[in-house]
Length: 376
Image (cartoon, rainbow, N blue to C red):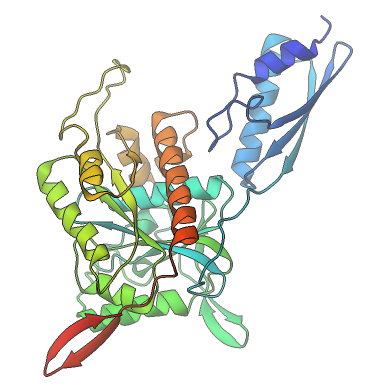
C-alpha cells in the first residue's frame, strides 16, 4: 500500500502531548511529514518540554499510530527538536537564580495541599519550566514519599567556595525536605526557632541553581512557620488549597486573610478546589459533589481572588502519591487535564502579578516588652 501524507497527518491528530491540550497537528508540534514509497515515513516534531519521558512517549505514540494504519513493516523515523517556552519575566529576584517563589497553603490539614503542590510541580516541569519544591511542612514532611525519594540524602557540593546542599532531583523537579534528614519513624519535636533555622538552611544553604518557580509546601494553618518563611523570603504570591465543604472554606478564608494582612501583604494568586467531585469509572459522565458543589469557587468570587481550578476525587491520585509518582504524570487522564489547567492559570496569574505589582517585601519582626509585632 502506498503511503499517503494526508492519511498520516489525520492519524497524528489522534495524539496529544503531555502538558498540552491540543493534538500534535493542531498545536503545531508536527513540523513536517515526508513519505517514501511504501515503506518509510519521516516525521519532524517540535516539543516545548525537554523531559526525556515526554520525548520518548511522543516518539512511541507516533510510531504506533502510523504502523496501526499501515503495517509494522513500515519504517517510521521521528526527529524531535525541543524549543523551551518563554520564561516568566523576572522582577525582584529573591534568591539569586530563582525567579518566582510561590507559597502553597491551606487553612486546615487534610485538604490535599501537598498533593496539589507535588502535581503542580511536575506539571510545570513538563511544560518546560525549571521547578523546585521546598517541603516546609516541618512536622509532617510528605514530599519524599510523593516523589519516591524516601531514602535519598542530599550531598554537599562546593559553590563559589561555599559548601551547599544539593537538592534531590525527581521527575525533573529539584526537591529539599526535612524528611531527608530525619528517620521516617522519628517525630520532629522542635520549637519555632529551631524549625525556622532548619528552613533557612534549606532555603539559603542549598544549590537550587536556576529556577523559574520554587514552590513552598507550607504546613496547614496560619502559624509560626508561615511567619518565619515570610520573614526570610519575599514571596511572589500564595496559592490556597481548599475542599468544598464549609468547615474547610472557613479556614481557607483565614489563610487568604493572613496573606492579605496589611503587615504581610503577599499577593494571593488564587484558590484551588481539591476533591471537587467524584466520578465513578463506570459512569464517566456523572459528577457527585460529595463535599458540596463549587464551594471554593464561590469563596474565590466572594474574596475577589482568582479561582485557579478544581481537582476531582480520583483513586489514582491517592495511589500515585503513595507509590511515589504524582498522578499528573499519567497521560490523557482527567487528573492530568485538571493540573495542566491549574498550572496554566497559575503561570498567568504570576505574570499578571509581576507586571502590575512591585516585588513583595520581607516581613520584619520586632519585639518590645516581651510582645512581638509584625511590620514591613
